[in-house]
Amino acid sequence: MRRRRVKWNRVLLFVVAPLLVLTLLIVYGSRSCEHRGEPGFTPEMIDTVTPIEPTYFYGIYIDSMYVEEGQITPGQYLSSLFASKGISPQVTDYIARNHKDVFDVGKIRAGNQYYFLMTNDTLETPLFWIYEMDRRNYAIFSLTDSLTAWHFQKDLDVQLARTSGVITSSLWNAVINNGGDANLAVHLSDVYAWSIDFFGIQEGDCFDVVYDRQFIDGEPVGMGEVIYSEFVHCGDTLRAIAYEQDDMLGFYNEKGENLRKAFLKAPLNYRRISSTFSNSRYHPVLKIYRPHHGVDYAAPAGTPVSSIGDGVVIKKAYQAGGAGYYLKIKHNATYTTSYMHLQSYAKGIAEGVRVKQGQVIGYVGSTGIATGPHLDFRVYKDGTAIDPLKMESPPADPIKKEDMEEFTRFVRYWMEAMRHPGVPEPYQAPEPPRLDSLSMDSLALNPQA
Image 1: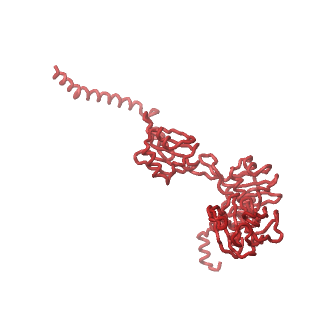
Image 2: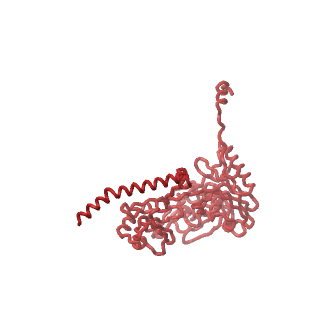
Image 3: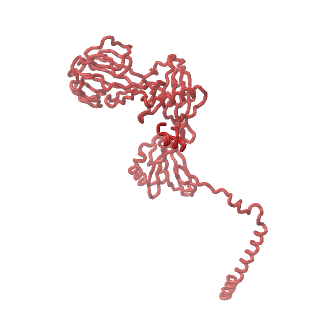
């Protein structure tokens, strides 16, 4: 009985089954022939089928992954975050120790965005972790066997923007109220640092500025350089034109004069540096270590001391237990300088008096706490002491004669463009004239031409 069944099975396999398949093919072929040329079956329509585009997330192909988004919470560490996803402490430790060149995970900040890319199944195994360092820069960590890491940067779109306004309370409020970038007020303060005291701007002062504004994914994220600015202060129109000369960007007025005036390298000619800027210097008189946020210039008593730049004397006083006779000069909204241990002041020096760069303001002495005659010179930037020897002195050179023709075209373009509403088109430098073949032939025939 068992053998018969086997034999019958063989008949089904080798005779009946092939006949059945052949029958089905004949029926299907005849039907497909009947429908040739009907809609839905043309080769042309098959060729127009749109292929499915792959999906990339921060450069990673994620069509087969699940993306989970989150934010770092206050007090959260990478170890606890990874542990919540079943990632071993060994993997966390390896990443922390070996990828500091990409990102130091000990510096993760509350509120920053992160993403886990995981397998799209019930296990949801983490494959990648992406951390937002800032709006543009991201660190990507592979959590697979390779445990690699790399930096990802979003594309930055730079567009010209224009903001104008009238000051009623402050420059910052005027910029924000007119839809400008929040950093524009700071940039303008820097551009006009040598021309305008922004602590003294008046109601009714106004500005009109074209600058580079930066976007990521269509959202504004900051600004680049100011391109052209007109600032009306106390009735005077002060123009600032950004122009690159000798590979250095500077700001000039319409005459080609540099808006930034250079500081003198030092406040006196005859000098020897006896002590430099330090956060912990041994005081020769007090016999203790304490900060010395200035530079000491040893010089004979009576050596003239000069102001390193234009400014206003804001302090003239005596401090018996320290600076002795000293002066403070405010140069602009950013920089203030201090001159200490003076023997005496120059004639006419008083609080509120304006001084010029290089003008004698006092004389070297040893008043206050001092072992001998010297000048203790200090520089403050935005109220914070900086090393005078490392202070960046902005260039003061005007536009060179050989560049004046192009600079003049540049200025004329912007002055005309600002007469019209809206954001101007970027300036296009004229192309140099081209010599066609006819011109070349004429030059060859007429060398004197």
